[in-house]
Structures are given as C-alpha cells and as structure tokens.
Length: 74
Image (cartoon, rainbow, N blue to C red):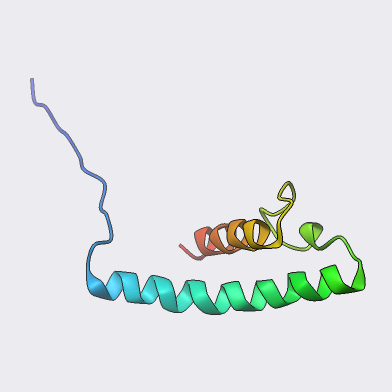
C-alpha cells in the first residue's frame, strides 16, 4: 500500500511576508478609520465589517474583519 502524506505550504519566504504586510496594513488602517468614525458618530460599526459582529473592542473587530477580507482574496 502506498502511503501518501502531504504537507501544507507555509509562507516562509521574505516576499510572502512582505506581500502579507503590504495587504494587511492598508486594509487595517482603512477599516480602523471606518470603525472609529462609526464609534464617534455612535453607530453600530460591527455590522459594517465582516467578521467583527461579535467583537467588543475596535482593534479586535478590525483585526477580525481584515483577516475575513483577506481570506476572500485567495
């Protein structure tokens, strides 16, 4: 019997990390500004961001939203 084992590819090169940061950072800043604007106006900003529905802190909600957004890019 043939044993086939597959290993998941982990992004370990410098270029992969750089491209991750170049996508994550601008998205984080954009969604953070949107969440802060919503917080200042008194609106429910968690409903605007995908993945942030059950988060209570702004940074946690924006972090979850950015990862949700980035998973849609692949």
